[in-house]
Length: 366
Image (cartoon, rainbow, N blue to C red; front, top):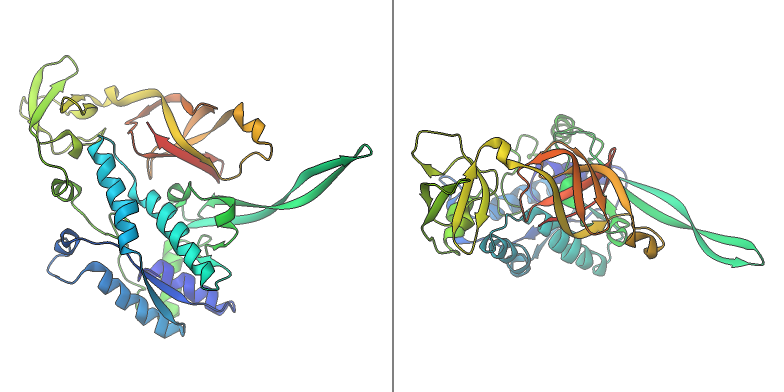
């Protein structure tokens, strides 16, 4: 329970259905920088969120525990994020937070403490089906057994769908998961929160980095990556401006560029980390016919692992959160070829794979 309206309603719905619910607030890492981002309030954001979670837990009549994952969050999410920016890439910390913290350490501890299931306030739908697995062949007769198969689908509320952030999940994790609000829209969730008498019914949606909150990323990174003046070149190699560190900029970025030649608009098209050079161009210069993925995870892997070594999938790809889906083909080496060129392919970001409403998995763009 994060202290937001979504997890509040998720807990209330489960309690009303007869589940024995225990709420858990996770304290994650925060630096002095995050406290400064809360306008006019020197209190750390997590303290206020915990108070909101406590009010909700009291209202619906469930216990609320607080688990401290601040050290683990710093190591697995914050340090990862800083490390990726230093390498010139643009990471997605929310994906890493889900993989390492929420559905990693948190789930393991919950099961160890005696929980049967873990529920979150994610806008996503989980469906359980069965598939027949060939076990063996006895006297020309094929023997099968049924195996549980878990599939993730986009939320009913397309504007709030969070399947993009969950592509790293596995069958072993999903069999313990519940997503109570995936079949509701955000207005319906707020309406239920008000009906339940929850103080979070009108609380604004959280923004920014997972569990850290609103953050000026450039100012944040300057405390960990030393500024270094560099050149901004156009694609013909002409010097047209300067910047204070290639690490602070991302592919497709338009604002924050110190260019005064009166032309443009310009977008970051390419970065040379070793030379600390940013190349800029027009919107059309951001188009790419293909990309490469690493660390691919298929939520429903082929039963026969040999089949996974040679395949070509035709599917839909989302190259960044809220980006429209693009038709593409992906082959066994992680190469993705788009039916139409895609804009602003950004190394370090997640590319998530879909077939209709089902989210199949994803990978990291390189």
